[in-house]
Image 1 (tube, rainbow, N blue to C red):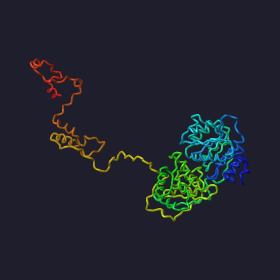
Image 2 (image 1 turned 60 degrees about the vertical axis):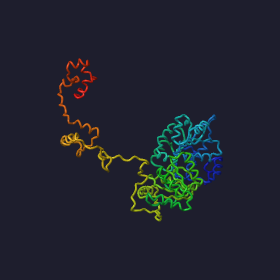
Image 3 (image 1 turned 120 degrees about the vertical axis):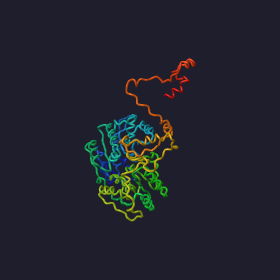
Image 4 (image 1 turned 90 degrees about the vertical axis):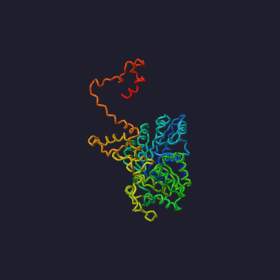
Length: 518
């Protein structure tokens, strides 16, 4: 079956012929006629089956057949939402290729880069907008994007959109769309959440499902290697010694793990680059371009590259870390075996990841063959580590604080206070303190024998401890009243001779006596 029976116009057929496409895939053969009839559609097909062309081709034709009214700047008539920047770029490239013979303008916007070039493109006017949710909402709030004239709304990789936490952003965008529109849902899997969302947004949709839910392509050869966590890197390097493996896409669960594995592969002589969310958009595009042009042999990526990235003639996919979500496994290995080509998917499974493997086999309804002949089998004496997908200590994490009933420094003797020899004036004070009974001490805390750990200043204070303590004052108002400074009585002759006030504090004659009384 060719594309002509599907009812596509000649400019699109010519563009497909220029791209080398002659026969539609099953999802394209079922979705294109339904979309051309202006029906809402819920499409489910495994990744790599041509979902992008299934909605781009008919939407281009519908927009070309019914152009907008004459205006200086064309309004945005089609909105395509994607979860990742790479997928948005790929859809933009497909629109440019399939619509090369049509006078339609498109623009791709996403975060991570400056917005001024995107704003300039919006001001010039476009017909099709491909966007990620975050940057789209940002430009909408700034007043650069208006969705009042949207006729076609496409939500690509809808399940991935939900997994990445974009459901609230998607609903905010949908709230700004006109009620009268044609909505298309395309996804690799159909969990119940997607079905519930489609029931709210789609009107009498046509459901197109060409493969069972979460199935894997039969042409992909799948294998699993059981090994220990610390041996995964060595096992991967051993597998890369095969010269027939031209390009490999390796998936890890964490970003820092991707960087570390990339450094280890480069040290071992294997050209590798990493791609993940912490990389700048320029670095991610450059890494993908090097991998597609075979300048890089190994591309280490997180699941951000598991959806929608079209890499031609990718022969091998390696799951360095098994995903804890079974559907993610389907999307990962779907990067190989695209468009009818063969592919190999290899999974490195440590003992703690066996539950993940069982969930994957249950989902795909297939037993993954085990390869036992390799130089890094499971060591039964090695400690079983927690799977990387379950528990990972944050890089640079803080040390756990000790409990309240535990000492902060449990080991090592306490530092003794520096003090000089005990004087004779200090010994009576020490003996008096040591004679205090345990009954007079607080009962809330148990203490050991008291030691003299006084500072030198406290020790000097003990020199005047021979002076008896003054008696306690009576609790009456007379005792509380302030009394004049005691002054030593003097004779009248002395006053007359000095001719000074005896109560004055600056009286040098009586100052020493006052100090003694104080």
